[in-house]
Length: 120
Length: 284
Image (cartoon, rainbow over the protein chains, first blue to last red):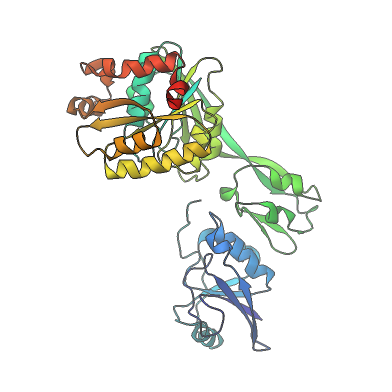
């Protein structure tokens, strides 16, 4: 199972970015192999509009089945739901802390978007 | 001849100038209210019944039988309105600007277009002014397509005044692009100058000649005048601050009708517009 984390940096001790679409990196962690790959979102982070949609697409294409996010807006949520990716919320400070909380089954599943749409 | 009334800063008096100029130029003038997020020119004109047209933009609809999920469409879309999810593609209609590019690049011919409503265009004629107003639906964020549709209603050989939205974003560019002349309305303040500089840079990029109207003179300072002098921008008009103008506008009345001396102040600019002499002024 692969789990995606919006990250402000490029390792497990990076701060968990509370933004989803405009987070600079996604750390996609594979639980079985205890390894991760990085998805570079820096160009999309500056998109004029639709950053959440593009980011959701990148997460899906990286094979993630779950996303850990501080906030997730309606358009990104729509794309993630359509692809069967579950969204979990976490207010952990680092990716490592969020990963441990996820492994412990402590992160609630988001049933609807928890952030407002950004105007185009 | 299309003359756009624009500004960087909001609240400088674009609509006031546009409707009062239209009044002086009537009959036979068109007034296009391109401030489609908050159209208000009609407040100053007599109520008239007219035509109403619903405006839609084409948005993609994907035939799941044909789509093989290749993602060409999503890669093409600059607005992130399409998400390729491996085996299929998802459309996010509210992000679509209706360019039609996805349909053209789809190798499987799996995309057809359906209309998504974004607003209406209302047109009516009263007192010799043909008013065309774009009105964006609440919650819609794709502004330029509606403005382009309003701009298509320009009057051919006749005279068209365009009331542009404030700012220098896509909406302003859509309203001003392709005009014969842009009148930039500003005020003699630091804010007025800051946003005037942005507006001038935008209009220069669009390669449309422009001149400046300094509204509400008598307060602020001389920095706008100095900027115009240094940049060789013609000041077409200076309109002094006048409480009676504000009072007339608050009642929905036209200052050219009810404020003594106001029409005389605007008339030289109206004459220059009618005579097509504005572009020459810009080169002076």
